[in-house]
Length: 504
Image (cartoon, rainbow, N blue to C red; front, side):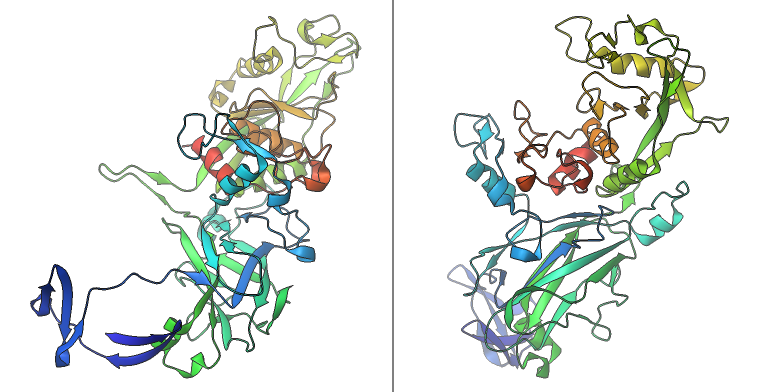
């Protein structure tokens, strides 16, 4: 065993000793002690040192341009100054859901967090590392979450022409802050070479991944990004760590270097391996699948004889697929019937969907998708009846458990962009007044997510809230569940857990 001597937090190799079997272990006053060669004596072991970040801090961020939500990466937005355009969440979070049963994190009589309470709760969604240094006000390092598919799974996945395959690589930028008088000998990214490569390197001692920007200086963006590639699947979360090797440490033996090096950053990569049930052990599906069927609605609201058909765009399907990939979910998209034609449901002669019908709004001469037969009905009947009409068509009962996505070619009375039947219900309709992010927003509603702004009673699916994008865009987020229109592109780790809980 190697014994190291510590002085003011610095370690150096002291001597090598041998530890023998338990016959050399004695018990003195109720405490274990160990005797090794040469009668060297070791008392009861002390506590391991707390993991901290000191002179060097390396933060990971998505690219400011070029990232459009193709993979899942969730980091707690802090104040990066001019280095990041996203607003720091501490400055813009408004509130959130507080458990009403008196248990943690409940602390008072209401069921909604105030902004300060909400941010304290939000911080707990991220693993934290203490920062101990002089030149920064930051006291904690919030470890980001990354989701990637194994390359073999991505390669084997069949998708329609133009649709993205599951992402197995993430390109990230780095923010670097080095304190002190001397730069470190090196800043190195360490990871399990069985599961990852970074910039094409396996990260071993023979082929290390080094960050070239190691000069002493305030927080700045590294000149180069890194590309993390997942080359094999794993059934437990993996860590990618950054270490700073202090001045003159590389002249020492490798074992000593590993003691002297200081943690400088970290990423947690979510488990991505599926394992079948074995005996009494249940199957574990870290990667999940959701089947969607896309259906165009045919209508003739004014009985003009001109049939209006709703259509889908390629881009809105790409965005939906990407936002699902963020949670390690693959969408299986079915948009052609067995004859190779678009799925349609023909309501052009259905009187309920024509002028004078129950879904006709006289004031606007458009559809009233919010129509309820009884004032006490919680869910509008528009969605149920369109889905029912589709499933009742010959051969369509096989889609009963699919997520049904309809598109309407004529206007609705309130100019809505799209709407889901209910939160957690896999049935939605897209309208004319939408953009290419509407499908993703509504699609995630059907998988259990609520808005990221205050929109009624607080509940677990509306866990943290921020300004409404349509009225407070400066402080709104780019989360898919915001009202930020075409700027929406991300989801958060705590949302991934909600979405995934809705799927087997």
